Amino acid sequence: MEQPDSIIHQPVRLKIMAALKALALADQIEFVRLKTLVGTTEGNLGAHITTLEEAGYVAVEKDFAANRPRTRVKLSKAGRKAFEDYVAYLRDIIDGN
Amino acid sequence: MSLTPDQAAQSLAEVESTQQRSRQAIGYSHSSPFLLVVGLFWLACYGATQFWPQHTGLIWGWGCAVFGAAMIGLMLRTRRARLDARGRAINRNIGIMFGIIVPVFAIATVAVMWPVGGLRIGAFVPLLYASIYTGMGLWMGPRYVVVGVAVFIGTLVGYYFLKEYFSLWMAVIGGGSMLLTGLWLRRP
Image (cartoon, rainbow over all chains, first blue to last red; front, side, top):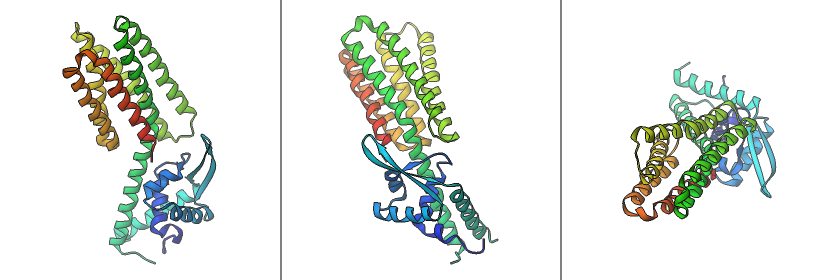
């Protein structure tokens, strides 16, 4: 990879992708839990998730649980691949390749 | 938009740290229902033992049967849930450890040490669970250490200073700690 993926390169989006990658393909994470993991505000997280969703890197599912709105996020196959490529890009830089 | 090796190393460290926290968070949410079941089991059985000590054998016999069934139910529910292979493995292993290995070890140990009074058995099992939770916490997250240490200390306080109300104490402190921790693990 000559240039890093500009979508993932942004630090908050990189954290979001890292948090989601740890969950594996079928797993989803709730928005509030993701907010704690990434350590950002609700508005900021929402904006970055929209960017990732538009890029096809994450899938967002909204429903109700116990009569309360719930938003869950998971990594798409394209997102998983893009994240793995980005991590490989970082490792290449560290290794001097 | 290229990075220096130092910047890349910093980004990679951030990625690994976030992934570690994410795994810990999902581990907490997976083990929450199991702690809630243990908490309800202790609350019901220790509480009933305090008020109907003449039926202790019956209470714990039925309690263990219901507890075992609940653990199996949780494991089966996990198989149907939309978890990945790692999540299912975590849940299955937690269920096997707390639903089978620990009870069998506790029963075998009491049998070897027999005759042992009811109070000692009542303290031994929570001390065993508390030690395991504390040990688990060293790998899986500090919240397990908190509940482990709380139950361990609570059990010793009850055993040495509140013998007459030990079962009631364990229902509230042991069962209550497990229930609160089960709810705590569900929180982000």
